[in-house]
Structures are given as structure tokens and as C-alpha cells.
Image (cartoon, rainbow over all chains, first blue to last red; front, side, top):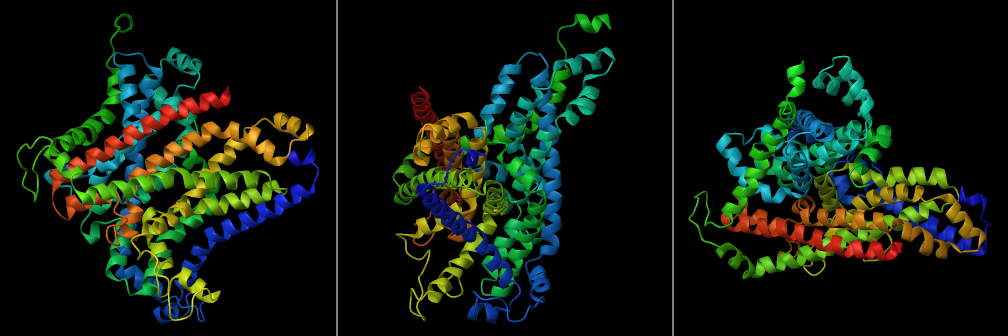
Length: 282
Length: 302
């Protein structure tokens, strides 16, 4: 570590104490809203109103089932789970299928399709919103989560393919040739060699696309209009708009929506950080 | 076997490509073309209208609300491109130079990255509670330190002059940790011998940061500014739930304005034109910024 070569000068001590202060303030600022939210979800509305800054005088758990009921999480949570799983599978299956020939095969139109895919990363959700809404009405997919998979999921395919192409290109050609000699078809090679060898990039992609899907709002808010069809984010915003005076309920609903993911993150931190930063380091 | 070998053309690659490109064509490329098409029509109230040429675009640029939303968007994009990026840079450098490096950087990373797990919707809703005048965290804190007399409160997100900046705070809160983690990774890649040489030559920390660390990080800074800039243009979720454009349309960025024109005013043709303008401005600004960045990076590395 750099510490070994540098001596502690007065300047260093000033630097250290200033830096410690800034870091501690930053961490407190990050952490405190979470603690405040969790703390208040154990209180009744009156107590929140009177003293939201202090720990609960009596831990009451009754707010949770009530909030779960009114916010209709009994449908929103399974909807989110189903949507996220299907969407992640859809993106990864289609992207890896498309990335494989672009990275490993020679064919007419290869460089054009590669360029088209990479350029498509720039497409933004907003420009698709209005035309997709009418397309989904025509297809009768309003209030069906598949509408969000088809539009939002497809929008991510170019980015996912791009990550996969650059990874697939790195896998040594010898493996492919030796499997070919053994009479292995290209699809067998893809499924039983290429995909297992790509575990690092696939796991990053699974994390990234899961989080994006779980948190998706724009399309689900627009396409899923019935309460029973909604995923967690639009359902949560609906609940906040409707029951804005039910303080206890709001805190509890937010805690229900946020805390499970935080717990998951604390256990799988390394993977989350790796996955989320996968796209932006060149 | 020999026949297959002789044949140069194979259908196999296209079979792999088909599902992705079929779905992209139907749900992405087709929709973009449709969207462009709508923007030239008088489509409103669910009644597809006739061709009106560039009328919607002319209307947009003659509309004060739209011009105001462009202004808010530009401020918002400038803030998202710079503030979380440089806050992350500062935090990463501080953690890097910590004397108890390993532990502090681990804890700091865990905590500062945590808000990234939340959806922008949850962040917006949480901050709507934090900003709440009656029970909100901020007003209660201000009461606690006696900054404001009891019985009064600071109306966050109520003043059109400052609402956009107040609405931006949750954005920094959520995303500074992301930039920090990326900068930390880039810092680990600086060769130690270069830094050691600088220290042996008696370079102070500030000089070391200025002449070694920052030049090394310039490409990462450029990447993060670009990523955050694009994110700024696309911002929707946070402001939708936190302010919904208010007060007095002061936080009505273009994406919210488009949404309102489409799904509240049912002016689909007009809203499509706004969407096209938004899309084009993302492309143009990314292009312009990459031109500037290229020259900047080239000059730095010389």
C-alpha cells in the first residue's frame, strides 16, 4: 500500500481528518434516510406525525399487513417476480443467441448487423412510448406484463448483445475447433461450451437486467393500468397518490418494497457492484 | 459432409439472429418509424389525424411551456452530468488515500452504493416524505437544531425558483455512489511505481492528485459524464413521483412534458414531435460531447 512509502506529515494529518469528516458525513447522509424510513414503519400514523425523528415508543407490527393489503402487494409482488424472471430470460436468451454468430461466425451482413445493434443502444425509451402504447392496444396486451417485456426487454437487447459479443470474441478459437472435430454441432457448442465459459458476463447481465426490470416504471406505469396487473413501482406510486395521509402505511409500504432488495444486496454486494458497473467501464 | 463443406452460404447464423432481430424490428425499429410518422400528423384524442408536415414542431418551438421545459431539462442534464460525477470522484479519491484503506473503503463502498438498489420511484417517494413539511426528516432536523422556530416549516419543493434544485438532491443521493465505485476501480489500475516515484521526489498529495491521479482518470471522467448526461435526458421516474412537474411547472422536464401532452392532453401527434426532439437532442449532445472529449483527452495524454 502507498502508506508504506509516505510519512505522516502535518499536511497528511489535516488531509486525513478533513477526509474522514467528509466520508463520515457522506455515509451518514446515505444511511440515515434508510434508517428513518425503517424506523417509522414500526410506528402508528399519530406517532410519526408527532415525532418522526425518534425511535418508536412501542414497536408495532400491525402496520405491515395493513399496508400490504391496501397497497395490494399481494398481486404486485408476484407480478414483479414473474415480470422480472420472464424479462431477464427473454433478454439473455435472445441477446446471447444474436451475439454468438456475430462474435464467432462469418456471414453476409455481419458487420452491418453488428453496427446496427451497437447503434441501437442509443434508442431511448421515451421515443417508443407513444407508438408502443397504441401497438399494445392493437395487440390487446394492455394490462399484460408481456407488453413491457416486448418493449422494455427488446430495448435492452442491443446493450446486452454488445456486452456478450465482446466477451464471446475473447474465448479462444481452439476450443471451438476441437469440438467441431469431435462432430459437435454449432448449437451444442454454444450451449455446452460457450455459455458455461461466459458465466462471469452472464452473471453480471442477470444482476443488471434483474435490477432494471424490478425497478422499471415508465412502461409498466403506462401499459399496466389495472391495479391487479401492476408491478411494484407503479403500484407503489399509485398507493402514495391515493393514500397520502396514511403516514404509517406509506412508510411500511416503502419499507416492504425497499428492504428485501437491500438485504439481498448486503449478501451479494460483490456481484451487484460488478454487475451494475459492467456496462460503463470500457 | 463434403457438400456442406463446399457450400459457402449457410443459413445457420441467421437462425441465431432471427429471434432478436425479429423482436427488435417489430417492437423497436417499427415503433421508432411509427413515432416519427405520428409526429407529422394531427393525431389526438385517439383519432388518428391527417398529415400536417412540420406543424407540430413549429407549434412546439412556439410554445412557452415547451421552451421552459427545455430550459429545465438543460439545467437538469448539466447537473446530472457534473455533480454526481465529481462527487463520486471526490469520494473515491478520499477513500483511496485513507490510512485505514481496506476497511474504510469496503464500508464506504457498501453504504454509498446502497441507494443504487432502489428504484427511482422508491427514491422519489422516500424523498417526498423527507421533504414533507409536517413530519419530514429535514424539517424535523431543522427544528431539532433550532434553525427554524417551532410551528414554522421550510416548504421544500414549494418554491418554483428552487424546486428543480431541491428535486435534484435525491438524484445525487442515489447516484454519487455509482460514480464513486467506478472511479475506485479506475484508481486501482494506476501503477503503484509511478506514485511511489512521485512520493520519493517529494510530491505532495495535492500535486500527486493533480499530475498523476487526475490525468489517469480523465477517460473515466469522460465516460461517466457521458453516461450521466444520457441518464439526465432520460430522467422521468424520479420527477414524476416527486413533483409531477410542479410547482408551477418548474420541474417539468421535457420527458414529463411529453408524457403530459400524450397521456393527459391526448395530443399524441404533438407529443410524438416532442419525443422526436428529445431523442434528437440526446444524439446531438452525445455526439458533440464526444467531439469535445476526444480533443480534451488527446491534449491531456500528450
